[in-house]
Length: 461
Ligand code: IFM
Image 1 (spheres, rainbow, N blue to C red):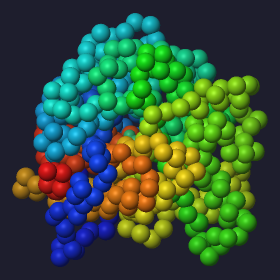
Image 2 (tube, rainbow, N blue to C red):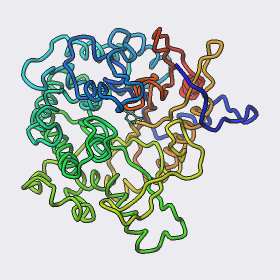
Image 3 (tube, rainbow, N blue to C red):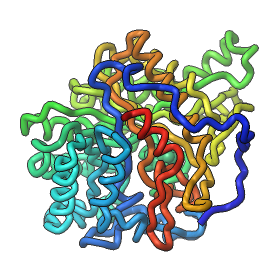
């Protein structure tokens, strides 16, 4: 399943076949890994998983390209041993996966699906057998349908049910997990899904946005408390941060543009970083959202801002912002003229460096930071048994070098995970957008490591 290329192709003479970085360029004990997420690879139809809100979202005309869903995905549920061999053979140290709430608790609460829990048991043991550090993310968007039916992340009760789920995973797997993240990408869970309507549940509603932006962080906090009560000390969260720049570079210093940048940063970054690290949301956001916040939200801030052991950052791109005179949030988002990935995202490794510097300086200080996702979509094709994704090879190399530079300049960098191990279900874009180090033929489930995989493997040897 591949189409014709729409991204800029690299002239053959400029093609690089090896990465320029070496392990020695990164701090001691720096960990390299590959990341995936449950709904995107497992196959939701296997093993007694309950329905989740992505199933119903995908079943609704117009939400997902070609109406595709995660019912089969990469059939990782049955093929995880071979997939972990690919991780190990790439000389990686760790594997980031997620536990599917709707697989473990088909109704979101109550009766545990023993088969589902057993799957994660076997998965984690298979990682340990291969000396891969298991990095677990508790929630990567498989909200059980029953939770969605009671209002999803607009309902405070869901944060309590999520903490119960966290406790189940913590009790069962906690002592075998190297790191646990509570939530993947709260911005996507809340703003992208409740304001832009791009992801499940597909809402475009400012009140739902305010509530979900708060409750997803409360869910994080409550899960932290539940896991801490079990004595676990390897806890963090994964934030997708955006490098925000003015569209009109010449107007950067104007008060209007400064205000726009502050707002863009608040929406994408500072709401989440501020809540977690300072126990406070940016005023510029509250100006717009306050009337929609749940009563007494201030009382939740100590739960949200409890200490973490590490921070995960997902970085993909920069965005450009310009003021508009319309409704909240009073800005337009665009991209510039740099080469773009198949997602239309500008390739800008400098933005990763800047994001790391900004985050450490303003918020996380000495806390270890992992890049928990970084990578690009490309319309890769298998030709004579190989995939020549040299554009991805360069992308990964340049972003890893940006991490090395940030570490050299004092940011406590601890690891880097490529997104993703496998081509997989890219949410609203179905199976069209390929992010993998390994190509997946979704008809035969054949895996073909790409040029980027081979180059990463060589660099890490
Ligand atoms: O595929 C997603 C992933 O689920 C979350 N982070 C961004 C990736 C690429 O869009």
